[in-house]
Each structure stands twice: as structure tokens, then as C-alpha cells.
Length: 300
Ligand SMILES: Cc1cc2nc3c(=O)[nH]c(=O)nc-3n(C[C@H](O)[C@H](O)[C@H](O)COP(=O)(O)O)c2cc1C
Image (cartoon, rainbow, N blue to C red):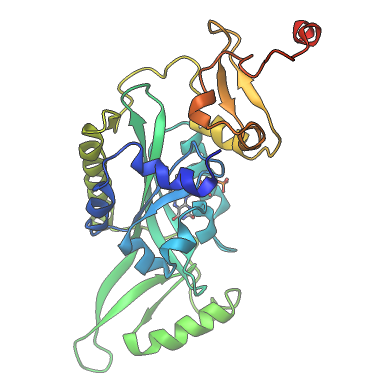
């Protein structure tokens, strides 16, 4: 049976040519790509820009779910909006508070979009673009035209000059609950038109790369569902939910000819030694052999 790590590695390799990673690395956007068909809905690719922004290494990010960047002040309602969009296999754009590896919170514009298989209409990946919300402002209180950044820090926003950033970052990391003392608390943060445009451009660029590199593998992807989901196809949301069940089981579709297997859990694959691709679509009784008790089979 393929290990979880191998499945994560294969997620891009099986659908796009090998150059896809290089092409994605060259895009100057902060983004991640996830695979909803793998248990836990993990990140299978993280861009260099995203790693730099979050402070995590690729090894720490790939294989984990995007929720690892959330923290105590992340708005649960916004998280539910993302979950709902995944369930309905559609795009979403929200303002989200996340935390870097060193514990500092930051606001970002998060835009997510599904990637569909042209073959069977199923969702093969999701793209998530993270644009940090940041404004430039000229401060003139010392009489000089010093350019400072007004950074959307956690659920507070304050104007800071680069020199004080290191200290502020340290304090914020040590105590995220008290970081709002004395500064205006903002429950939400609105991205500028430019930031919204940046997110939309990023999604388009990533989709172009994925579409292009899927052409020569014959397993083409597209940004809109270009065919009705094939019979027996499990949607992303059900796949993610089933992936949380640790027991060995399969699901069959009794409405299709020969009642094929439409889902096989990781524990089932481990128990039987089969690869998922060898199991899906097969007649439900493929595990039977000469010594299988026919009366028990009859009962089933
Ligand atoms: C492609 C993709 C990227 C994501 N990136 C992030 C992220 O950077 N930060 C975050 O807080 N959530 C991110 N998420 C959302 C979480 O992975 C998860 O879907 C969300 O927390 C809702 O699910 P839950 O209620 O099971 O946690 C991402 C989701 C997808 C599909």
C-alpha cells in the first residue's frame, strides 16, 4: 500500500509533468495546493513566497492541513465559510487571521479555488492564495518624510516603524492575548482593491500552470467543472469526512452495475496490501477466493 507520504508526492506527479514544481516555484505568489482525495486533506505544495511569509519550512507545511496556521484569534465564522466552500466545491474569498511560525498573527486575504479533472468532473486539487494585508503610509511626526508600514497585526492595527518591529514581534509572540492592550482592536480587516486584484491574478497564473502541465499527461485539469461528475465519484467533502475514520472499510455503490467500490479507507488498504487505484471501480467481492465461505457470502 502507498504510504501517506508517497500519496502526497504522487498527488502532483500523477497529474502533471515533472516540470510543474519548477514552474510553480517560479511564480511570485504566496500559495498552497491541497489534495482533498488524501486523508486529512493535506497541503501537497507550498510556494517559496508562502514559506517566507509564514516562516515555516516546506517539510513542516507539506502533509499538514491549512488549519495549522490558525490560532486563538482566528475568526471561527470565517473558517466555517471556507469549510462550506470546500463542501460545495466552489471558490471563496475571505479576510483571515493567521499565525506565523514564531507566533505573530497577521491578516491576509485568502482566496481559494477548486481544480477539476476534465476526465470525470471531480475535484483533484484546491488552490489557496494568501495575500498579506499591508498598507504603506507616510508619517511626518518627526518632520521627515519617513516611509513606515501600517501593518495589520493580529486583531489590532497600529502604525509602526521598521526599527520597533523586532521588539513588537517578540512581545506579540510571547503573549498573544495581551497584544491588544492600548491599541484599537479590529475585528476584521479589509483588503485594498490592489490586494484583491493580486489574489485574482495569482489564482489565474496558478491555474494556467496546472492546466498547461496537465496537457501532456493526458489527465487534463480545468478551472470550471467541464463534465458532470462521473457515476460513483465521491465528492471532496465526503472524501475528507471519510478520511477521518480510522477503521478498515470500503463503500460500494449499489446503484451501479456490479456494485463497484467507490471508496476504500487507508486502514483497508493497509490490511489488504492493495493500492487505492487497484481497488476503486472493482466489483465489491474481488477479495473472495477459493476458501471464502459461500454461505457467509450468501448472507452478505
Ligand atoms: C488550498 C487550501 C489552502 C488553505 N490554506 C489555509 C491557510 O493558509 N490558512 C488557514 O487558516 N486555512 C487554510 N485553509 C483552510 C483549512 O485547510 C480548512 O479547510 C479550514 O480550517 C476549514 O476546515 P476545518 O473546519 O475542518 O478546520 C486552506 C484550505 C485549502 C483548501
